[in-house]
Amino acid sequence: MTRNLSILCTSLALWMGSLLPVNQSHAAENWKGLISSQYPIGFEISPKEACENAEEQAKLDAMSLAGCEKLSYRQFETCESSDDAERCAFFQETFNAYDNCFVAKYKLLERNTNKLDLNQNLVCEVAAEINVRGFKSQHNPNLIVQVDDALSRNFKVGDEILVKGKLSQPSFINVLAWYPEIDRDNLYMLHSDELLREPKFSSDFELPPVTQSERWWAFLPEGFNREESNEFIIVLASAKPFKVMPKEARSSFFGRLDEFGRENWRIARYSYRIFK
Image (tube, rainbow, N blue to C red; front, top):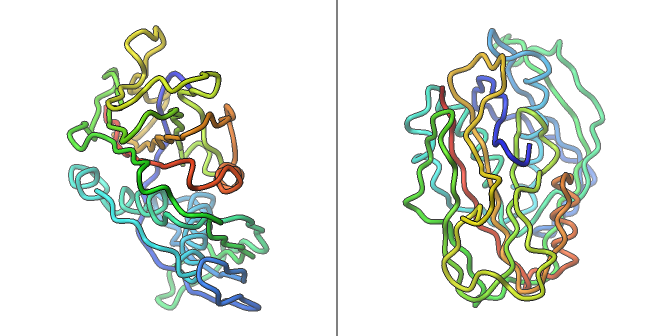
C-alpha cells in the first residue's frame, strides 16, 4: 500500500443525520456526547457502506457541535469532473473538515440497518459516544507548508503521482495517505524524514524524491468495478523529526501530534481521483 495509491470506492449520497447530544460539554473545541446519525441504503450503497458513512457523518457532526474551526478547501476542483460529485464531496468533507480539533475517542454504541427515515427510505442509523478535543497549543505562524495548486487532481491508472509544494522554512517532511474505502480508521505512511538529523527540504519540495527508486503510481486493484476512486494525502512539515507509523489510527496520529506540540508542525492536504 505504500507503493501504490489506491482505494475502493462506492457511490455516496450526501445526507445529514440527526443529532441527539446528551451529557455534553459546551466548551468550544472540547465536547463529549452522544451522536445519532443516519445514511441511506440504496441500490449502490450496501448496509455496511451506509453504516460506515453514517459513522463518519457522526464524527463531523460532533466536531461541528464542538465549535471547531472549519477549513476552506479546494473541493470543487477535485469533484467537478467526478462521475459522482456527491460521493466525492462526502469524502472531501470528511478529509478536510476541521483544522484545530480532532476526534480523541469514539465508541460505537448501536448500528441499525432496519431503520426508516421520515420519507420511509431505508437507512443505517448509528449511535456513538464521541469525544472531540482541541489542540493544546497554537501553530507557529512562521511555519507554513503548501501543496502546489497546479498539481493535477485527476490521474489515469498508470500515471505517476508526484506531490510538490513549498515550505516557509527548513522542515522535516512526512507524507501519509488515507484510503477511506479500504480502511477508514487508519493512515498509511508514504514517506518519512524521521531518521534525518537535519531537514532535507528548505523551500521547494517534490515527493517521492527523484533519487528514490520506489515511485507512486495511480493504481486500481484487480476486480475494481467502478470507473474512478478518490485518494487523500497529508503532507506533515515539522521543525523537529516526528515518528510516523507504517499504519496508525487517525485518532492516535492526531493525538500524538497534539503531544508533539502544534507549534512544531503544520499540515497541507491534497486530494485527487484515479480513473480507468
